[in-house]
Image (cartoon, rainbow, N blue to C red; front, side, top):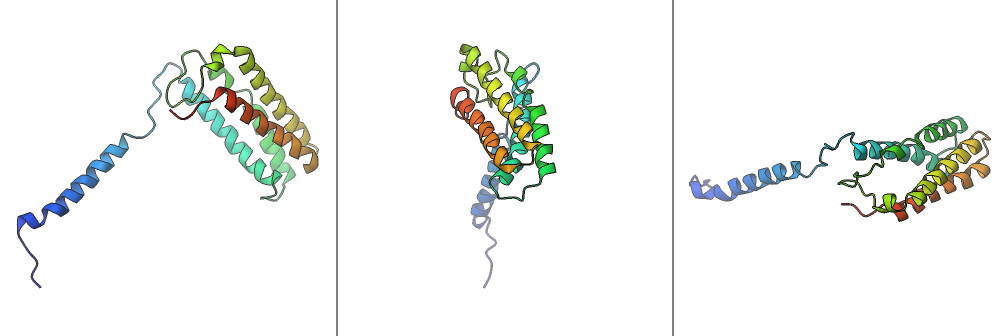
Length: 163
């Protein structure tokens, strides 16, 4: 079998490579945009919420029995969570409703309710930390679920769909 050497036989191959290259270039622009707003409030609060999530996840695995309960490790996570629980709130500044933020304007139109949601979360985390020190999973479990519940209710009221 003789391979064709005609130039028009290579066009589909070149077109495929060109299309693939353009797709790769196009996707590079699809990443998250850099936060250029003064003080970067969205970037800062999202980073803290990600730390909170990464702290809650291993605790949840222990509470649900998907990971062996380690009292010292759980208390360490609860301590970290208590420290983090007060940190995101100062970054909910007026004018910080821009992509990729999912915050609803109700944060500012209902400031008392938003403050109450913050306090509910902080209080639930404090209770969880207190219960974690008892090393009693039967006391820890409802305290952990109260933290989850405070997150969920705040998200329902103050967090919108992805932008």
